[in-house]
Length: 137
Image (cartoon, rainbow, N blue to C red; front, side, top):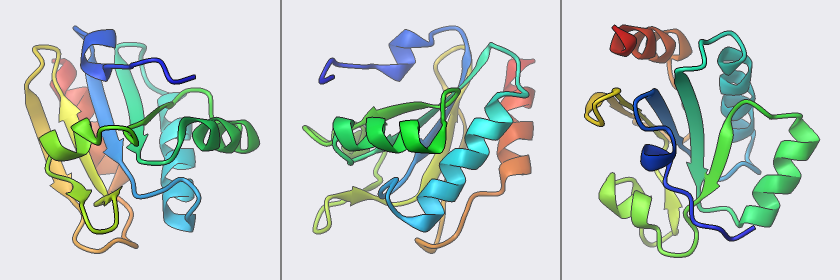
């Protein structure tokens, strides 16, 4: 649906991993989101992973169904690109996000920020997961 989701409100008091991707329909984003879904299944419930893209919600839903992704929460920022602007990841001319990962601590403050230099590069998953576990302390 087109309901409004605010990951920071929805998961307040938890550690939040925000993974910004250009589009789930590309190989790298597909791999990245599947990998984060796999990692999420091994994590405690107080670490939540969101993937944010400018794909339409119905496209995201279709992709998640086909990929069997249930643990990662997928959020669309297609309408107002509010997240993209706030986090400085929106590539305006293309209207999609630069690949990046943010971790928000329990107190709502950013504890980890990584902008990937090349579109085709995947995040360092171990580094991200370890940083999230560190933020739990």
